[in-house]
Length: 105
Image (tube, rainbow, N blue to C red; front, side):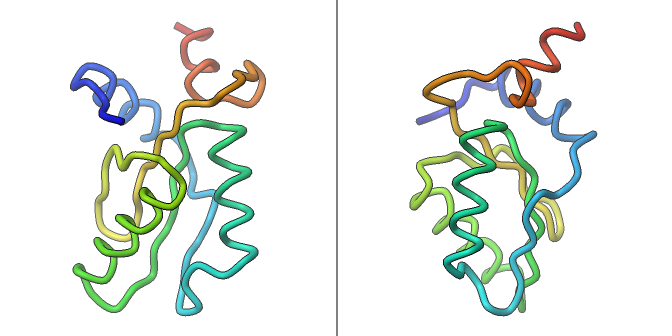
């Protein structure tokens, strides 16, 4: 799945006002973190996560693993935060961050 540059720009603008939903620390991708990531991506489509890792390469690897496992795409990664997107199979206008932004525009 690839995102067009126009969509990526829109998602970054939406993501600017989001707060991290999930924080991944020393224990990594535990069962509860995996469940929460799945729920958040299913409900919201676009989520911001916070990564606490030893170095830049470890963060990059963790984001790659998350994107592969959850079939999502990293829209942007800055510092300790990453913005992830996965298109929902069934859109819920009340929960989707993308649909809410489109309704406000």
